[in-house]
View 1 (cartoon, helix red, strand yellow):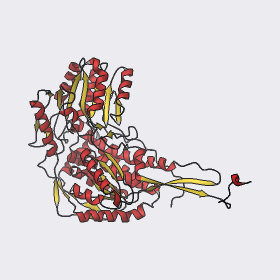
View 2 (cartoon, helix red, strand yellow):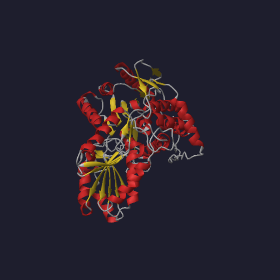
View 3 (cartoon, one colour):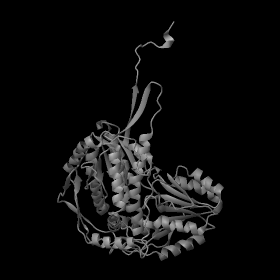
View 4 (spheres, helix red, strand yellow):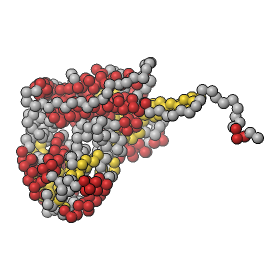
Length: 542
């Protein structure tokens, strides 16, 4: 047992390396990319101390070169999920009782492993398996995951330090217990950092986790498990399983020990999971914690006083970085008629200059979308635009999946602010612009607010502070992360806690103390030093 009031190392954001020509990191990541690209991964289930290879496998194919095989991952059966639950609950007996500073040390070590010896492995695996450029990978799989781990440790200590007042003769204290049971972590393909954060944030607080990573993120998931093992995460604390998502989820949710879900993914899937939890509510030992970040239909709106070049750059970066596959990506844009011609010229110039291809070529800004289902969906929307009279393609609109799932960055101009691509989440490099009459600025703000079921991110550009304030007020419920004169992407841990409401999730703000609070069950302990010996109160005296 630890003796002392310990102070953890001060959390600071991990510096993002440039990978500019001539830098050592550029050479290192390219060598690591080649090595991993030619490595045949064999990703098992991780259940306790066992690496289970079921023999039933699926292939790992880079989205930008889908005929190439980088290995396989193994698929679980129901018995494996049940085993993972039993293993996690057994591990909880020791992990939940481990001193907080010991848990902190494990995840601080994980951060240092990622920022140091594992940095380029994490980056290269993310570049290959998820088709991220080196800069997008560096921000995600090197810097952000380290930030999550380090800042979460700091937030944990802040939470533990929050204690009630005590009156004379007694001592009140609160202990922050882990949840009674296990946490189910479901993570997406698009951010390796999210894949790392969702199981570890719960585990840091003394919980055990069943982690189901995305099938499209198997290479970086494997590297994450390697890091966790080397960092000293005990066997059974984080168990990684893959397979039929419905089977896995149903098995997990039927357990009476299910204590919570930490989820990032599709809105509809999350709603279905919530419904299943409701249907199973009488089975559970406790009311489960339901934490989810789901979809987005994120906006940019520009006031007539905006700087056209700044708005255009925000559109290009906000809509097309990582092929628009961010839940925060700009997807609908509202521009004043007076500025549209100039902004249009800037955006068209940007898009036509974008290089597209493999992330191994570090001069590329843009690579492939994640898989064929995404490609086909995006292609169908683009074809719809080409046929419709109330929308047109301004630039882009081509696609090709012969080698990789490449969809050009595409800008759509809609005559109707409620056109299909203004309302539906596409999750790809397609942004739709609606041009409004300058005098209808406030009316358009209300249109922005009322158009989408989502409320994740949004941005306003304005050179007029009064109008920036007006937009901030009218759009107060339209985005959980709201940006003034900036693109609606790029939240940094410790600076911009991330999450949205409405159909975008529970807004439990990953990268903040607010999220960690969801993975604890506080217990108040009151200790009276000299207990009373007479039941009578002074008011009873005659």
